Image (cartoon, rainbow, N blue to C red; front, side, top):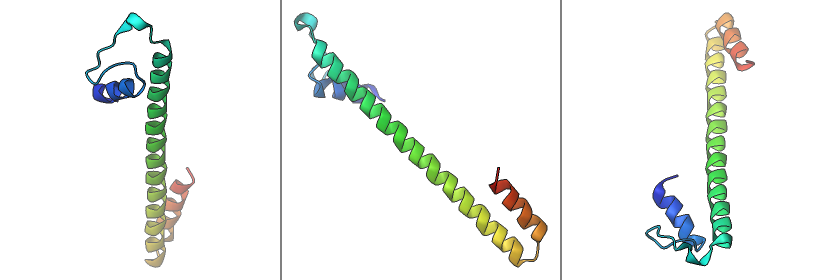
Length: 90
């Protein structure tokens, strides 16, 4: 997360102004808790997005391997197709 993103969350939580300046005179306990929750939610969303990307890439690789194995079978190269299928199961 960038510094600007963290400041934006601080502003949303009422912890600071748009420049990131905090006034601690008033004891911002509730705002700090709200800020921490916002940061955690943003972090969790980014992790979930990355997990989705990784799953999609894995699926794409499996589909590509299957297509390669099919081509090898069509070219009557069963030993190559078998090797490709064996990699899929690892």
